[in-house]
Image (cartoon, rainbow, N blue to C red):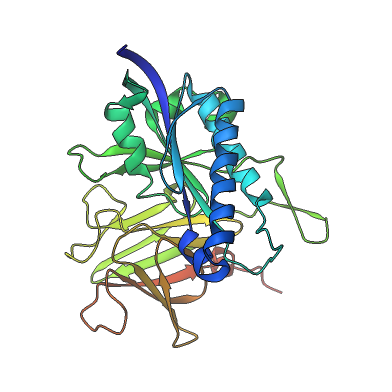
Length: 311
């Protein structure tokens, strides 16, 4: 029977399985991936959702409301650490989880679901970094006030195959207080964002506080627009997380970083690195290519720029 219902659609994708197969071999890697998918499937069920189908290294599920879907996504991220290779090896590559959430009208037919919300949730995985949950504005609107406080707007994002951009939010991990624990158990207050300067040609901007995160890309809708055909519409994102600026690659052609203090080029393929000091960010082409679209960055410490009292 065909039904038209309002549902929150969840797509979850495990990344890093290729490296697992290379390190562990087919048998053990298959066991790890299978256990991981089974675990997140179980979480869907215990959170009140329904698994529509598994998709290789991930799954698609639907929930009656946004709160249940976000609770499930949180539990997926928290529980993935329980998966340990059968051999007990700890030096093997770690699986990363990306989650996309969209809410809207879906058509349920023959055990499957169709509709714009399904397509949008699936496309959000293209823009999610490691261990991140991205959600549409319609999902955020259905959350409780304390959950909405964890949602940071990434502004409108152009999704593959869709004409109109979609307002996307990053749902931060669950916070259990306003302080952060150190390795020694002491608690420190959360640091306020510093500033970061980005320079490409004559486009010189400084971002901090409410203006974060910053999305770099070719689309006019992104925060920092770079008009070059090698740059994806939403190519990379800079966040303030854990007391540091984090650069996440969202593209198909890759993002490259070289710090002023060294000559090594860090290659990001759907990965993340911490930005410190100053250096160069190459978008869509390695920094060894002199024609590569290249953004200069500088992490600013505003405290150092404040006037000091005379001694």
